[in-house]
Amino acid sequence: MEHNREFEIDGNSNPIQISRLALDIGGSLIKLVYFSRNSGDDEDPPKDKVGVSNGVNGRLHFAKFETAKINDCLEFISANKLFLGGGFQHQENCTNDRRFIKATGGGAYKFSELFKEKLDISLEKEDEMDCLVMGANFLLKAANQEAFTYLNGQKEFVQIDHNDLYPYLLVNIGSGVSMIKVDGYGKYERVSGTSVGGGTFWGLGKLLTKCQSFDELLELSHQGNNRAIDTLVGDIYGGMDYSKVGLSSTTIASSFGKAISDNKELEDYKPEDISRSLLRMISNNIGQISYLNALRFGLKRIFFGGFFIRGHSYTMDTIAVAVHFWSKGEAKAMFLRHEGFLGALGAFMSYESPSPDNLVVNQMVPLPVNASLVTDTNFDTLKGDLNGTESIRCSIY
Ligand SMILES: Nc1ncnc2c1ncn2[C@@H]1O[C@H](COP(=O)(O)OP(=O)(O)O)[C@@H](O)[C@H]1O
Ligand SMILES: CC(C)(COP(=O)(O)O)[C@@H](O)C(=O)NCCC(=O)O
Image (cartoon, rainbow, N blue to C red; front, side, top):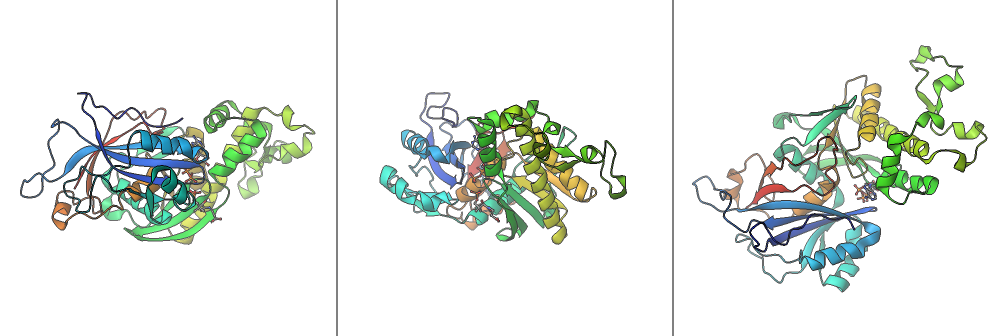
């Protein structure tokens, strides 16, 4: 079972109060974002403009489960009493016995009855695209070191200019892929999508390699060589470049093309080579379609989210190279540290609005839930995968 670290007891053996849980139930994964209130007075309480403390300090936690194992998720919520609200002095309609959770993604509809039946919880549904955009805007505005570029194995955090953020293209690579032109808070249009996404990589990979987990498939791709199965331009052109149209001999002419002429069975190919080809094919395709959509609307910035990416270097490199190649360096692919949690964060933020006074304290964060973020430093930049183990210190008003 994949989930987050221990959180029931803090360092002083005080029970940690969990308030506010939001879910994003997707085709492949269920993402949870929940807030634990600090139990001690170990941090300065947030103050408003006249110096009055009025917020709640705590941490945002992240966890994920496979949608196919939704019962594990229900058990996790139940065992840790994540559905109990309360703990916020400033929420008017907050009572300890309220039994609803904000939820987004298709599963918020599909599993509504299951939550009611098993946990007696109603899922309050929020639109998936609204939540993705809300989550992305929030992170880009509020979190330090959220967006980064990845080229030639080099990760570089991008300083976001808040006055020059919009418009941008948000590409969410989940089971399928959504491409959204974002013009501001709540201002967006889903301009395209493709069914060739994370579900395709994992689904085809599972069939072709017999891998038992996504992580195993991803790990395999590290050791593979896509040339064993992809047809390169050089394979067709007798080792030469097709320079007239700018294709080098090493460019992939046809993904999986060698399988036609090799006269081999599936078993004759190494699973690691298959995994690598598959990852490259899908990442490259998404990078290319993203660029074409950016071109359609004259967008220079493309942010990629969704759990397909998993902070994986080869995936990011392939996407970034595709965007760089097709745009001739004009457009920039950027990745998000909280890539898989955009929708869940958006749902989390769709709880009730704060009072106008509280907006002043965090004026950089003009959001329904007024939160000031200080991200932890325990993010492993080499491994690059947040994977539900990082929490965010924040204050909710
Ligand atoms: N542990 C995992 N189990 C299954 N799929 C994973 C895992 N980690 C990453 N993935 C990839 O992430 C995709 C799901 O991404 P996500 O953004 O959660 O989308 P969705 O909302 O459709 O579930 C999967 O299709 C798969 O490619
Ligand atoms: C239907 C979806 C929005 C569901 O989101 P997901 O669970 O994949 O994150 C997504 O799978 C999608 O955008 N698919 C591509 C459909 C298309 O535009 O062809």
